[in-house]
Image (cartoon, rainbow, N blue to C red):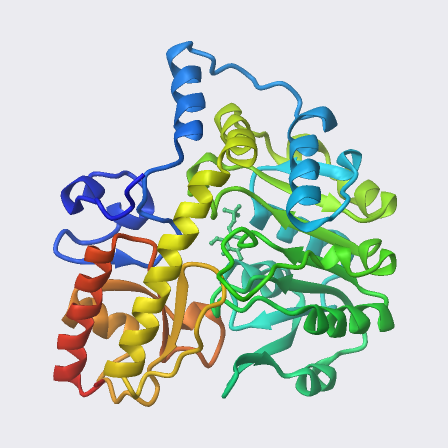
Length: 388
Ligand SMILES: Cc1ncc(COP(=O)(O)O)c(C=O)c1O
């Protein structure tokens, strides 16, 4: 497969949010979709279902289906033993976040929340009347690190749930076993439920390794709900399918107390595509990760050589590059400035948490040619706006 052979005109005809919400003279690099063609085994199963008009209500999902495929994959990739009977298939990962916060905490309680963070985490916490207890990523000489001392000082008495995002959107950090252990120790100390969003686990670069939080110890597993899906790594977010794995029967029972009709239905295409991704997609995935890693290096080199005033840590996973423009002397917020002057659309920093207005997130999952065009446009605008 060639991931470098993308045609801008064709991309602009896509109906998805990434391209359709972007003006025709601008290049979108905001929402977390990749521009690459989807893996052939996924295309094949979707084509087959459409051609056979096989679009009726799907079977199940039952533990023998996608849950078993997921459990096998977790064992093979991470040595993690998941009981398929403790897996639920959901519409999406964000649904799992919301339901977990609502079920395992009360209005006014604290919820440990990473910062900066993929904005739906903030909706799940503040939007549900909970108080965020910030787990901050600070940029150090070694990249982004969790400020554990500050986290300890932030705790409020009724902090019932800890949200973890690993690998982390937007910084691209892959937490080490030691960092995960420190987070989990806090959760045990305060008897918290951990909700671990591991949706980017398949997009990890050389030198780093994803550790599922639930593999740390049986004591940690039993208080952990792991959420993931094939939607990021296999680029099928529009198909709406995710899984939640519960570390104890009690967590599972509480989750299932929400009626399945209220939890929403699962689409037949999403189920089939996810199964194809997880059973036949790994060759494609290897190629994509190689291509993304080269793009990551291209952006890292560009920042180092051309934009000394932009502060950023190098992503260890994800196709997202989080940049702090606060020292770059731009005349307006970077998202607005770059859209207006460079005609590139990044994700603005503000929604990732208060205090991140001068940051922006670049999605580098596109062809090298389009990525170079994006960086070149940013060079010109920043030179004019004093960012370089
Ligand atoms: C950390 C994280 N969680 C969840 C999602 C969204 O997942 P879903 O579409 O399954 O809700 C994303 C999408 O970018 C993400 O980055």
